[in-house]
Image (tube, chains in turn brown, green):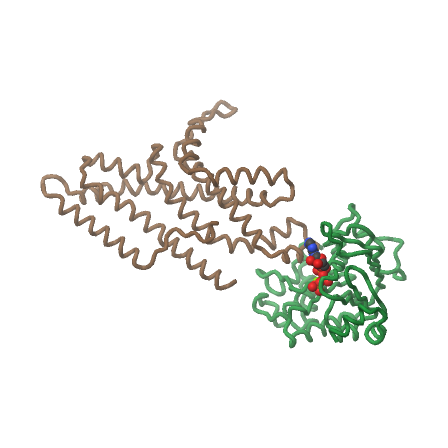
Length: 266
Length: 252
Ligand SMILES: Nc1ncnc2c1ncn2[C@@H]1O[C@H](COP(=O)(O)OP(=O)(O)OP(=O)(O)O)[C@@H](O)[C@H]1O
Ligand SMILES: [Mg+2]
């Protein structure tokens, strides 16, 4: 399902286009700014850029942590899905399908509201769980389910002859998985895994809805603080889109290169 | 494998008695009896779909039997309590589709199972692997990946990989069927060397000339039964059963 999916089918034209748009937006902002007494939209943007970028830092942090969590749990869940024991297989399938087929925003809201904002340790110590941590968890769950499915698919795509050879050489199931099957799966899993990372990163601004101070939340806060003028909208949002683009585009380019290389190798 | 103290080399090393195998309601093996002595070379021939692969795979427990007994060195293969892994250390198998591990080099392919399964010393295994690669004439390819080798070369690596586990019996299931005619010979030569060295070999093959040359005994199977068996001269020159005669007239 996910193998053929890419973040964006972009060419070299795309970055140029983005740069032009950005420039156009800046010019528009300057042109709109007829009253010289007020700082121009562009000046305001420049003033608030560090604040927005700081928010973006949180987006990156959430995306990296969520991806790490999703990868570890997704791989475990994926292996559970191929277990010969129904007791292990069935719950893993249930969890996988539940989180793969639920809207991300619903999962996010559910996590935000279900997980308490603080927990009390047995020792009586209280730990606060910041909203961004909860959001990270909420983003990780659907990605985990998809990685579980990617792993299962990759294992299934390994020819049965590999299992039979390993069996015949007296390897145990665990040895076969670890030394024969998984190494071959990793290659196949790389492109879809990177696609999911890109998608996950693009989803992180949803956390703004729940009050997390990431890039989108900070952008809105910045526009408000600068006077909520309508001419802010285009430059501020374009700037926001550009930073995501600059981060994601190389990833999607690299993913496509990997896909091509694997297609050529097989 | 739990050594069977009662087994001696005077008894068959591989013995199948009344082996039946069904896939669903379809009976593929309908009572197979075969006995192989240590050091013997046995060929199984027969039309496509007659159950040759199924038969040979019951010997290392890859395919469970429905009924009957398969013994290797006097030990029942299809005993639920048997340690399958222990059995497979004694019985090597090579398949039509080589099935090398594509992410490992030739040398690593050969060394992997002895290191992981037998937990042997690395330098010991490495020396043995190199000797085996020398034997199959692929010493210069030890750092190559399987994809960089021809079919015949890959198949010889597969043979070396099996041998590195120091099996007592080697099974070959149409190991030359997927090869170009030019490379068939080099694989057959390898098997012949092995047989000359005294390895017990069971081969499923369509190479009739080779079967005749190498085997001590030939089994002809049809529709899940052994129709006829005997020394190669008898089977190939004076087949008794009309089904054998018909098959041989088609392939010779
Ligand atoms: N796993 C399986 N499930 C169901 N049917 C099977 C299975 N394996 C084999 N068969 C059937 O059993 C029959 C015998 O198969 P087998 O592979 O043993 O024949 P063979 O003599 O090796 O043929 P060939 O010369 O084409 O390799 C065939 O009809 C095949 O379709
Ligand atoms: Mg076959």
